[in-house]
Image (cartoon, rainbow, N blue to C red; front, side, top):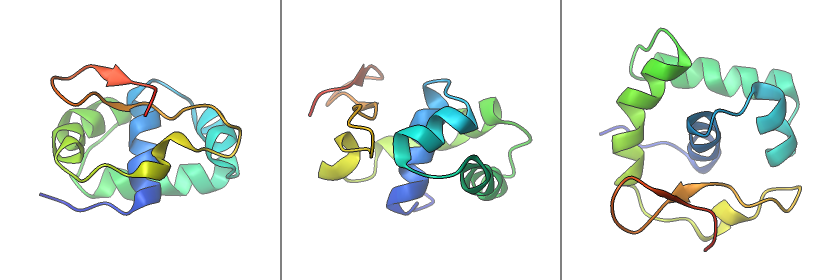
Length: 94
């Protein structure tokens, strides 16, 4: 299993929710270019060719990583999606 740092985890979750690089940047207080760099590095980890393939390969591993209490605290105050305690559904409250 690949271990991702906190920022990569946040970017991956927001990709899984279908957000664009610009939207992810607004959620996390990053420039669109910085988000693009994070996405590019994420695509290299599982050797994914696109965002959909990345989510298919990385999301199961991410669900196994410890919960982060700050995942619900992006810079704009909007909750960052995270997995529910069981199953594949998402929860936006902590």
